[in-house]
Image 1 (cartoon, rainbow over the protein chains, first blue to last red):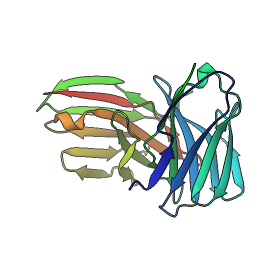
Image 2: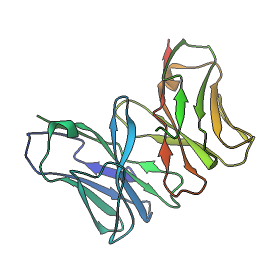
Image 3: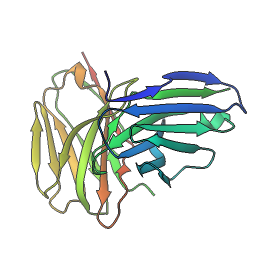
Length: 111
Length: 111
């Protein structure tokens, strides 16, 4: 089983719908991150959390929200999805903030 | 402004050839990491370099950290089709606490 698990792996939705992407980890790391990846733009940080109840905005947080329900769980929500949020989303964990361990990704398509 | 510039963006070579890709910055980094991402998967950590001038080898992959800790290179000897992937460099600049990623070097090894 993967150390960092993302669900769903693929999702197609319509503009205006609420979407939640979930991430769980078994690595015991305190730090968790959500990134999105777009062709030509690389990985961009959406939100990160260093502990339960600690939430920090990344470089592209507008239109997204997160919840750190437990040390092992970090979910990303799109309250009202729009087409330019179509992307590949990655959850990652870290022990010291230097080396990241990524999930397999969630491909989201907003029509 | 991209903190880490990777070049070339895309490289296609024949199996058995050697290749080198680069990760450059005007900032000093306490360490740099290299990840490889295969299609449909999340990035996987290959190596971390910490000391200026450091060279690390991982089978046919050789990683070097620049003396001034501003750049790094990845050399692949006798490339194999399994080396195909997106190679990402990442690091935390001195005086900052956030990990930065380059946009990646897309390597294709043709059998």
